[in-house]
Each structure stands twice: as C-alpha cells, then as structure tokens.
Length: 58
Image (cartoon, rainbow, N blue to C red; front, side):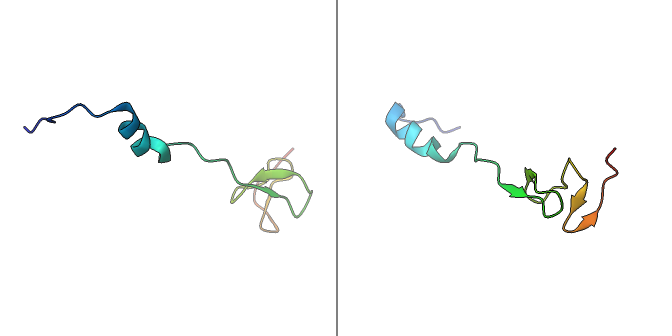
C-alpha cells in the first residue's frame, strides 16, 4: 500500500475538515397552532403537517 511521504500539517488537515460540521436545524412555525417545529416534520403539539391531522395527540 502507498504511504504518505510527508506528514500532513495541522493547518492543512483542519482546512480540509472545515466542512465537517453540524448544521443548524431548520425550524418552521405550525400553520395550525403557531408553535415552532422542525421543518418537514409533523407538529408535536397539535399533530398537524401541511394542513392535515397526521398524528393523534392527546
């Protein structure tokens, strides 16, 4: 197998890894109750998604 001829410097390694980070979660407001929920997910408070009841919330 091939081996590197030179040690990869910390700066070069960290430049390559700048895009390996977590992104913020996109939040939306519920059109039914107005609470904040994750985008493309059903609302945990009322159970609505895109104007329809999809979860039975007690």
